[in-house]
Structure formats: structure tokens, C-alpha cells
Image (cartoon, rainbow, N blue to C red; front, top):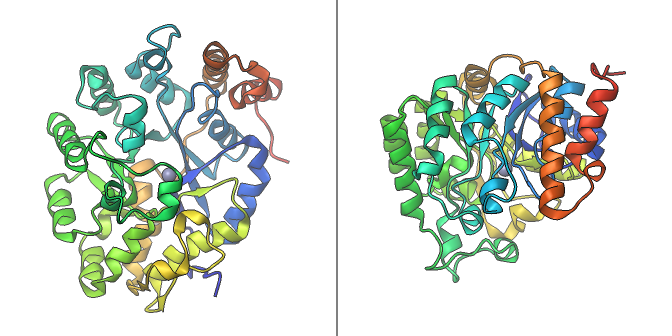
Length: 374
Ligand SMILES: [Zn+2]
């Protein structure tokens, strides 16, 4: 079986990547094909390419009831040693609010991100940012850490190694990253954070429970990391109990990327649907994308969760975090920000603004401020 459709209606996917406005039609096909009603576009910025955020804003403009936007930060000033100017991180938060973004996406905490900018999130660089986020109360989807096997050359999966996601003693270590998060939460205990990929604690449910108990405003998303499904399938009963007990703290997500084919996206969503809803024992289908690894890597045991638990995971929890409808895009501040992001990219890498996602989106938003959907 290559696809597995959910029986539940009104599913919100809390973790999707929009790669380019050229994939607008593709992502709508994915949405329909996978039986998902709304998506949160988590929008990591690539400052030198002028991409990451703009294409998500575009989707919000075009399909205002369907797409939430969680905006990533722009670190161009830091990356260029101050040669290129950006608003402070706290001022960027204010701009996200002004544009009508629904939340913030952070990748600062994935070890590869520390290879680019080696600044702990506890550093003064982030101090005003955290204070501002706490003040405006925007929710965050945050990727912290990676599976522990990524630090072990013997155990890292081939697909992860190929992407240079293997870490050594010179890289930031897993416990250091967790300790930084603890410190941020100690300073700002009201932060509303959904940690992506089960916070990479799927191999230690007792620790996952302690973390959720200690921090009542945070939760986990279920975006694979396929190791999450394999780890939790080792103790299906304990996992099911955990999901029932912490049903209010878990958000559905897929990590679908808009560049994927509909069948890859269906396979990705279908694995998570089937794991949550069925009592089947199964493997990743061969049609799944390469980040999920080959079928022989492991066995998944479905948890057959009750309907009320599924409703919370698929819909209610996300709505509590980000609202029942996406916020409306505010066009003029969005144009202003997109134009500036295009200019930053040009200053960093020489790419002409009109060739960047940011430049294209700014032009389209200006041309047709309302962007009527046909
Ligand atoms: Zn992701």
C-alpha cells in the first residue's frame, strides 16, 4: 500500500515547507491529494538567495483561509559582519506581526545552523528577541537538535550522511542544545513553543514526559524524523499511553516540501496518518521520499488512537496555538519587507532582485494588491 488516507476531516498540517511560488499549483494538489485542509508554512530564510519567507506570504495572500505563515529570522547582518544591515531580531518580530504572520519558525538549534552562526540562543544576540516574542505572544515552531545517531558515524543513516548531517566532537552537542532551551524557558516560561520532530526525544519517553510536565506552554510536533516512528514503535503500548495522556500537547505535521510530487507527499502524510489511526504493522512505502529512508530500515506499529485524541492532534491543538483561521496578510508592510529582503540578497550575493522569490512576490503584491483568487 503506497497511500493511506485519513478518516478525519479538517486536518491542519503544522509543518510544511514552501520552496517557490512556482509550486503554488503543486502544493494545492498535495493538499487535496493528502486530504489536508490547512497548512502552516514554516519559512526558514535564506538571506543570500532572498527566499524563504516571501513565497509563504504569497500563498497567504492568494489562499487566505488555507495557509498560516510561521516566519523565520533574517541573520544577514550577523552573517556579513555588519556589512549588510537588517532590522534587529526584535524589530523583525514586530514586522512579522505587522504583516499578519501567524507565528515564528526557528531552525537556530539544529546543529547545521550552528555551523553557520555559532551563537547560542542564550547569547545577548537573542536577548531582546526572546523578550519581544514573549511580549507579543507569537507561537514558535522550533527545530532544536537532531537524532542522537547523527553524532555517531557508526549509526548515522546514509541519507542523513549524504546531506552532511553527521556531526562530530567539534560540533555542538545534543545536551548543550537542550540546556540552552531550558535556560531560555527559565527566563521566559510563557513562551509558546512547538518543538519540531518530537524534540528528538522519541527514544526516551520518560524524559519527554518530564519536559512537557515542566513546561506547560510547550508541545511537540509529529513531523518525521522517521526515527521517531521507529523508536515509538518499539513500545507501542507505552507510546499510545503517552499520546493519550499528552493529547493536548501534540501537533500533527509532515515536513512536506512543495517541490515534492503528490505521491511522495501522500506517502509522507500517509505514514503518519496510518501510525496514528490504525493498528497495522507496516513499513515505509518504497514511493516515500529519500528523507524517510528505505522500507528495510524499520517497522512501524500503529497506535489506533481514539477519535478525541486524533481530533486534538490533527486540529484542536493547532487552533488553540495559532487560531481557527490564518491571520490576514497586510499587503503594504509585506511588500516593504519583501523588497528589503530582495535588496539584502543582492548585497550579499549579487543576485538581481527580480530573480529572487522576495522580488517576485513584492512585484506581484504591488501589481494586484488583493490578488484575487480565480
Ligand atoms: Zn521542516
